[in-house]
Image (cartoon, rainbow, N blue to C red; front, side, top):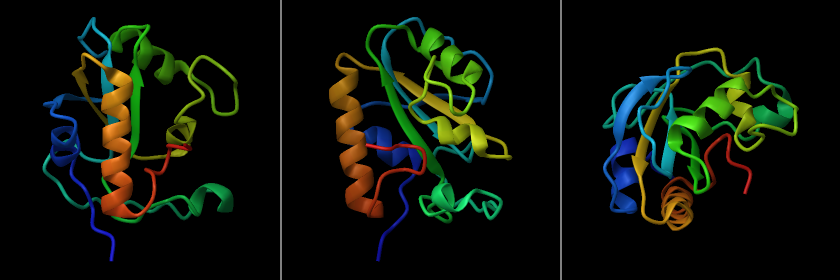
Length: 146
């Protein structure tokens, strides 16, 4: 049986410490490249979080992981965390830019929290985190597609 993963455990898998969180839409006060995680909880140690996602279209609902607090893992190498998250906040679901990765986050009607960490190699950190998530939970987070 798959087990949930906490935000704190996820960052530890990449030898990083989570900063924040900030509520979805608030700027990230970090001018470096790094990793960010969108979660359903403001508690990095929460292992469960329940929201009703029954309103999602069937194609999105099938990706939903009940009780899992982590819904997206992302990284930025060419932009600062501040700039990349700003693009994510402004993105419109279905548009090609400025941040189509993780756009399913935009379909949710609940409080969301963003954690982040600078990383010397954001791509590697993201890969470590995605692999750890898949190993523990059995599939990728709700809004990650590959």
